[in-house]
Image (cartoon, rainbow, N blue to C red; front, side, top):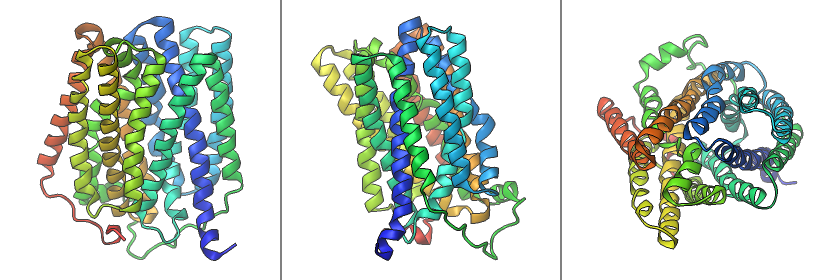
Amino acid sequence: MSAGTAGRLPLRLFLAGTLSSRIGDTADLVALNWYVVEQTGSATALATVNVVRLAPILLFTAPAGWLADRYDQRRLLAGLRVALFVSTLCLAWIVTTGGPLWLVCAMVFARASAGSAEPVLRQTLLPLLRDQRPLTAVIAMHSACLNAAMILGPAVGALVLAVSSVPTAFWFNAFCTLVALCCLTILPESAPPEPSASDPPTDSVWHLLRRNPAMRRQIALAMGPMLFAFPYTAMMPLLSKDLFDGDGSTAALLLTCGAAGALAASTTMSRRPPANPARLAAIGAVLLGCALLVLLVPSGFTGSPAAVGAGATMVVVGLVGQCYRTANRAALQATAPGNLLGRIMGIASTDRAMIPVGTAVLGPIAELAGTRAMLAFMGLGCVVTTLLTIRIYRAPPQPEPGLAPG
């Protein structure tokens, strides 16, 4: 094996495990959301399950960053995946036996509590595996795997719903988690980077955030997209049913269209990292809200025009949303010192906790004012809050020296 191939092997193993895990997760999510809609027919119930699924982010993500700065991220991630494997098997058993919705919610919460730390551990492990690659390119490669899973996972979920049942999707997710665990088991251990003399004291993370407007800007920039826009994944069964006269398969296909756009964005960014990811993140956030508003146009049609228009619009939603997400993460990681990276990313990753908050608000809006009003609220909220953030932080941070395309 050549030195170059050996240097690339750890990252390839890590990405293969991530791809397997995320395919299972997204197939599972499609089945779970459709199960709730089918059993209850309630937008509020759908919102409640997704709040339960996402609420642990607020509780456990930041502590995971603290752990990532002190312990081996690979072993922590392996332990989490064992917990995910067991809890997914339990959820499959509850649904198979016809357990009540409250018990489903309880197991979803338990599983989400284990999984809420996974993104932070993945993000802090990436810099140790990148070899000589630019950081933005590696983050984009990781995002490309996640987006490929968003294409394959909903397709698998739609196939399972068409030919089998919801529990089958949970069994499939458990198998994918086991494959990801095997990839981590054979992953060579990577030595952590040597501390730099310029690194701040490890207890100064809050002081660092107060002194660093670039970090604060990127964290604040999550408000609009995460609170208003990204809940579209949880609310997609409702959008599919009420706006496009579809079913669970339609919802899965629309999510697949969004993932195709996101995959195109992340693949392009892995080959040509942006010179100024902070600026790209701001532009992408505004365009994401606008793309959701455009989704209102095909909802006024029926039949093929509505389906084609919705699918094409979802490709754009995925593309601009991924530009925002990858660029924002790259801009933040580039400004974080190595000895505080876990805690900085742990704090930043709590932005995902705004998704259940947004979902909890969107469900009642759909009940009271209709699904079209809910979608308009999502798009306008994303645009307005992003523009306010840009206005507050008028001077964009300069691009980092190591992030120029090359």
